[in-house]
Image 1 (cartoon, rainbow, N blue to C red):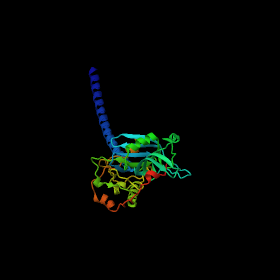
Image 2 (spheres, one colour; image 1 turned 90 degrees about the horizontal axis):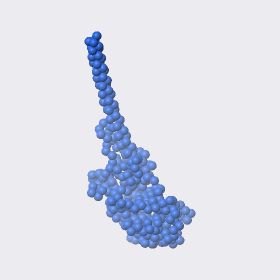
Image 3 (cartoon, one colour; image 1 turned 180 degrees about the vertical axis):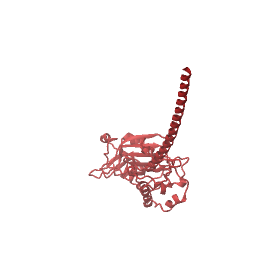
Image 4 (cartoon, helix red, strand yellow; image 1 turned 45 degrees about the horizontal axis):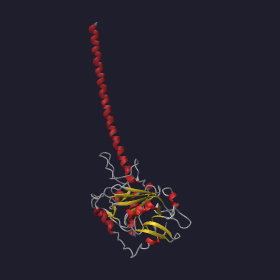
Length: 334
């Protein structure tokens, strides 16, 4: 009897071992198949993510200088950014439309064109504008003698077009900036931004130097935005644009566009067989502030077909003698 029981137990053990082995093999096969499918899905999702991220690339103008000013019309704040990461953020009040000629402060990329301890607005009752820092014809930063405008700073637009700031803040800004420092003005998320170029790796020989606005340069910059909106920016203009040191971008400025128009993915082949394409050096990230984490692709090696063709078609017209001279004492908007 005991022999039969031992034999049955041994047979049961062998059976359980056999079933367990088969289940393990089957489970291992399923795990292997599942891992393979997961890898394919990850590759597919990364490829799709790449495609979507290319749609969010903005057009960057690189700054070779040590600082630039950002004016955010939506938040009513201005920020002076330094290459080393320092910044000065101040509340402002920008322009709004009024019956006596007030305008909304124009958006765009400009540069500091003039500075004066005091400027006079002939258009608006000879108003004194303190610590004037002009960057777009008659539009600039300044303070006022009276305190009534202080309640609007950082809250809402209240000026005739200029960027009003507190007297102490604009005096500090006046001390820190120089003529030629870039200024970007935008409302919401711009499609074109400013960011500092890496002075060690940025290759100016393969990038386009942005100079004073002419009809040809303005057309080139507008077409660059159009290519971005149409998804052809990388495919047709895969080179960078930069502002040289202390370069005044006058007369006028360059459009910054809107991120809301970036709906078409940029044309670029994506392979799901090989490893996904690397992302540009910087791009919009939904998990962070769009503006500060947006930038162009890394400057490319010199290609005559990219940069020189565009350069050759542009002739910079010399500015007339005395241009902008009266801005120091005859600034109109305030």
